[in-house]
Length: 418
Ligand SMILES: Cc1cc2nc3c(=O)[nH]c(=O)nc-3n(C[C@H](O)[C@H](O)[C@H](O)COP(=O)(O)OP(=O)(O)OC[C@H]3O[C@@H](n4cnc5c(N)ncnc54)[C@H](O)[C@@H]3O)c2cc1C
Image 1 (cartoon, rainbow, N blue to C red):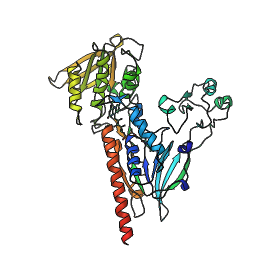
Image 2 (cartoon, rainbow, N blue to C red):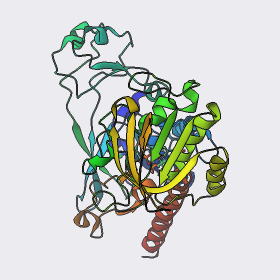
Image 3 (tube, protein in one colour):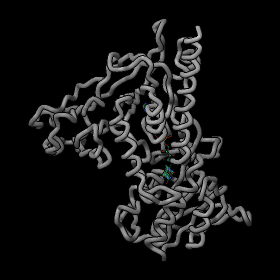
Image 4 (tube, rainbow, N blue to C red):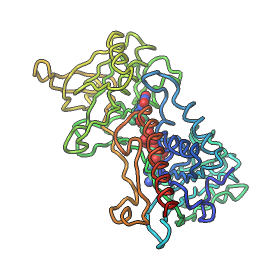
């Protein structure tokens, strides 16, 4: 059960395709390859498969639960005899030993061993810095990992109080990363995107990200007021006041030469999704979406946006230039109305800033590492290849797996002819 935390060269079939990143795209690529009989090594840097989708509440354009299908897909990966899943693992380099391509995978085992942890909470009680947390719910269901406590590295000062309090010696604060070199035949990157954290994008401070609890990121808002969280009415994060007016600010860092010059492709739709959740539960809520170009390119997406408009969500084509705390008036927002060219200002109780989503780098993917007859040929799928939503990421996973399998088949037939 805990094999997902271990990796050695002998466990890996040298004909394996290495997939870096276990989000929906990487998982789909793994399952598609396994269905074609190709062995897969799937490495994921987090403690669970599923990627960012595991943090979503419901997904557009159907408003179905995000978690359930992603969970079933993760379970299928763990259970496939052809897929070796390794968690807490990152690809750190690609090389060759002269005959075989090698991937360097760095394992960062958690300080609290999930195999031994009793989930009793003694460590959390003993910690003077409140650095020991219960795993958040998305990790407790993971079939490869039983429920366990976890340490927030940013808060921990390694005083050792937790290790002393643990009744089963499950805590090793000195655990170090280990790098293992494993043979692989091909590499698919599925590293996804890095969501903006509060305070980002740093070079666009005019959007006020991180400056006030009621100016939040879309992912924070998803957690604060997701439809399944059970709150009927939206309240402020700062002091729990009822919210009467809420704004969504689009392209706050995307399509902007200072940060991400491209469109992140999913923000207009997920803002509309969140706005519609709110409207469904609170029809009297005043909701405005400030957009640059409203992008709804996928199947059913235009209808989804129009339905939101009919439900009363106000759409303002504009370029907001300032989001700032305004004392008793809440959060002030200044913008240029694209229809009239006028500079206008309004106040809201909460503002959700959609700061663009940066594509994750492809670790180990250097021209040198990918060149030469023995270097594994690399492919990419999902958000790291191009900004896509869940449906697009899954489709890309299937397509990339098919491309890798075809390449292998033609290499084998060339080898056979020779
Ligand atoms: C607020 C918000 C709401 C959204 N709502 C919707 C929605 O309603 N509907 C919809 O269709 N889409 C939605 N999206 C978009 C959706 O999240 C993405 O389309 C989807 O997550 C892309 O999947 P992926 O597998 O490409 O990447 P990810 O989900 O980002 O997964 C990538 C995985 O790779 C791992 N990884 C990264 N680097 C490494 C490394 N070096 N080594 C090992 N592992 C690594 C990461 O830990 C992660 O698990 C939303 C996005 C946001 C931000």
